[in-house]
Image 1: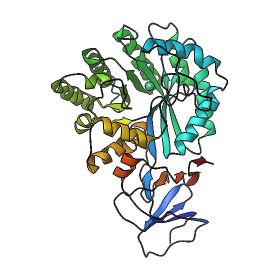
Image 2: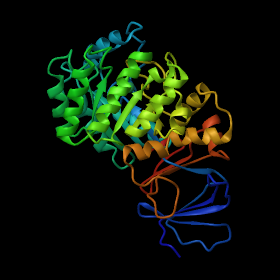
Image 3: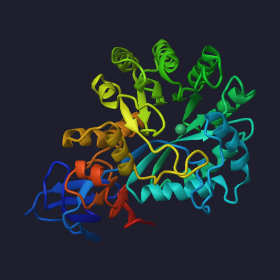
Image 4: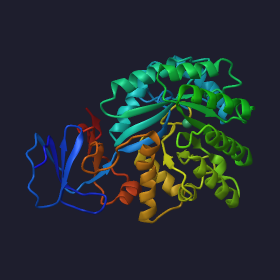
Length: 398
Ligand SMILES: [Zn+2]
């Protein structure tokens, strides 16, 4: 009989098995037992009444420092182009009535209540902010370490070469606790692709951290950046440690070039994270995944200075991405689920992910029959567990 603190009965698993029992001991899944098996004693028993148990969702691209979560509704203020959003941020975020830690913490809890266990967030590192945003997000991360992991990218939102002092700040941010160094549109924002990428890759090499670069550049211009990122990744032996965020360009080039770019990214071990942006070309996510690129998903902006949209729900995000990719079959929706969970976990370096005996107990329960239904309908989550502890029930976080 396995040792057991919490027992979940009448569980449905993603492989279709029903009436299962899941025994949780300390931080791990001690056993998964079939119907009719003798059940261990437990301090707490939850009857799932047939709910599906799915592995923790992974939000691979957020901006916890930018969110307006927790504030009264604020109408969007920026002009409809990227530079205006960047400039609006630099003024607005410094003068909000709630500090970064409070807003970021509120959004982390909201994400956890919807089954997210792991987050990668970018944090603005600019001359206007210095390391203020980072300090707030680090504090929010520490305060919520019992319910989610948060990985932080030092993000040069205002550029590197055009915003003097940013390179040194990025390095300071990594020393102070950021896990990766970021970048943004080497040509379009900085107008110096070589300077930008050389600087970012040099910081990564000196500090021994991975890289995650926002790439909004369209078409052939963006493709050039993809090629330069892949070349530097390989030259520096960083395969598996570099991510391109968005990569809109990959959706705006000929199919033959998409295939060549996919092969190059797979060979170079460069991953892609997408949020299925509404106003931009969508990368061919399935073509990329088939070529061996690690494709994962994130919510990006959740009600913030860049966008009034976003619920923080990774299943809803998966639904948007599946819909935009025009996929319908269960096998494809299962792939979308993996982009919102397992592949994201692998890229974030989460060693244990999945609902299996022996693994860390990071999962949630949902009234759905299959992963495909969870993506298609994304019903509300019931119970959320992180490291063997019940952290949320029916949307309320403990
Ligand atoms: Zn972003």
